[in-house]
Image (tube, rainbow, N blue to C red; front, side, top):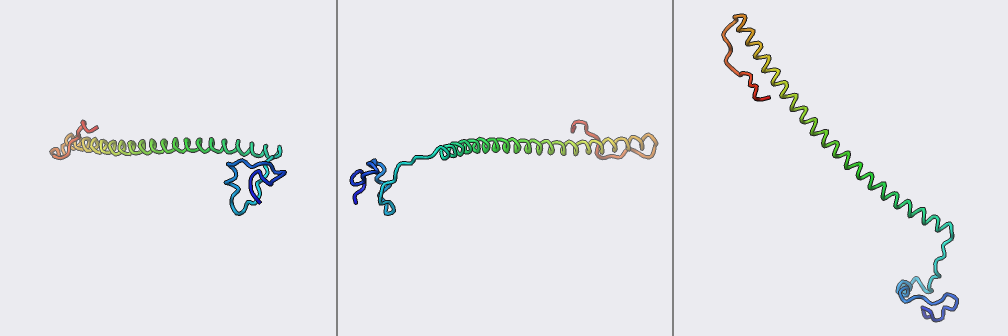
Length: 124
């Protein structure tokens, strides 16, 4: 039985571009054209809109993740700066306390000033 427009009576002619799709061993006759019902068209439309919405949601999610990562990075930088500032403040506090103790010793006449590490105000 030849394929195509010849010998198919009620099916009608098959366009040459579709002949290649129908030439396989599973296809012995050309398929009739699709005629979807209104419900099927509505379902296809709904699926297409859902797909577009899913892509938009995915893009928004990616943007939100990127913003969250930036925020985390900024928070880490701020935490590191705070840690360094706390260390520097503790060093200054220790130096100030040493100077006070030394000053008190000299004022009370408990000995000569200790030679050692002096407070350096330029390290602030």
